[in-house]
Length: 263
Image (cartoon, rainbow, N blue to C red):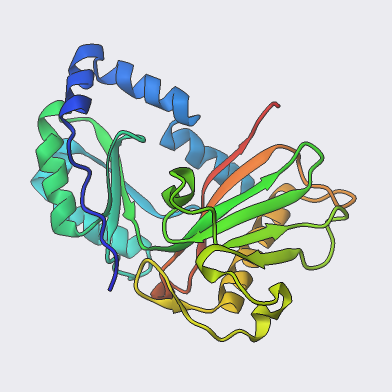
């Protein structure tokens, strides 16, 4: 059964803070903490030529008038794939619904409607992330990554330390080292190609270690093509987040963040 995380509840404290500092003030504070607005992140990913997860931007007023219209538009952008669950963030990292059905998400928006003006825009997208993770490069341009069954916040909240780790060799050539950990761990690390065990994803589908490894390497190759590799080294200090949509959509990888730090 697909896990459906209910809409965020207990938002009274957020609404209070919203009223105290104002919408712009709170949004600015959160934006600074997470490192860029949604639009800025989207622009950075597009500039690299990486695949961006389809989303719909809609104002509060337009969503009030006809919410089903925007769900249907999202399905069109997903080439006809109809998500089981959805994600919408009214304020990044603070007021958001994750893993909500259409009905739950509509209720979530209505419950918080009084705190936002008619022309306030938010993004609506699928939350059918079978697995997700990050690809990072260190100061020397060596690539590594961690991936987890389910949504990315399982890593950021410490709920999981990851189910698959990828480490590029220092020469940036050949197949990187892959190690399954957590609930997918155990056995000889090199035997994953012959392991037909099926692991349940957060969208209800099942996947083998080999299938997951192949899709992660697809994402690695997309990044490699986008930023280039010189003498086995990538651009240093990169941080990219990747989600893989449900099996009905072929576990297609989408990048949701791509930034380079100055450290």
